[in-house]
Each structure stands twice: as structure tokens, then as C-alpha cells.
Amino acid sequence: MAYIYGIIIVALLFAALHYFTELGKSQKLLIGAVLLVVVLSAVAYNKYNEAQREKMLKTIVKYEQGKTVTCNGIDVNSSIYSLSVGTYTFIGKKNTPHYAEMISAATCE
Image (cartoon, rainbow, N blue to C red; front, side, top):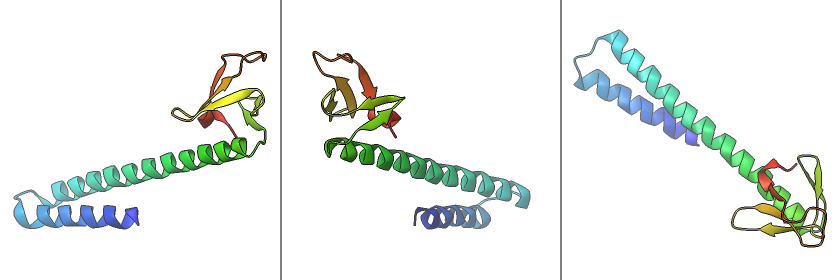
């Protein structure tokens, strides 16, 4: 859906350039192409960030279900690590070999 909005916005801007400016045809096409690339890049960036967020949230759910998740080659579970919900970081519990070790949930599989 975001792609459609992006294309509509670029089309409207291109129409405004076509009817309300004194620019040449090649300049208008260049401006339209640059705007299209900017909008599509923003959409692609948002899609990538959403995919990363979904991956991290699935990891959090798996951890909260009591399962072991792997983060940077380290097995993380609720008996060794606690979860800081504000930053989605796993923090090693006291009296464990991983005491005070911090691992971002974004690095987990």
C-alpha cells in the first residue's frame, strides 16, 4: 500500500512541475526520477526496519515461552539471562557465568 501512496505523491509532484514551472522536459523528468527514487528508498527502508522488528519480536516471544534462542553464537534462556523490555536487551543474571553481559535481542535468530 505504501508503494501506491509513494507513486501517487511522485505523480502529483510531477504534474505540478509539468503545469506550473518553466523547466525543460529533461529537467522535469530528472526531478521526477529523483523524487521517485527518494520515495521508493524510504519505502524500502521502512519495509526493512519492519522486517527486522518482526524478527526481534519473534525472538522475544520465543524467549518468553521459555525456549532457548541463539544470539551471536550464545545460547540465551530465562535461567541465565533476564530481559530488559525497554531496550530489548538480554542481561546476564547474577551468579551465572554471563553475569552483567548484555546482548541485544536484534542480534538473535
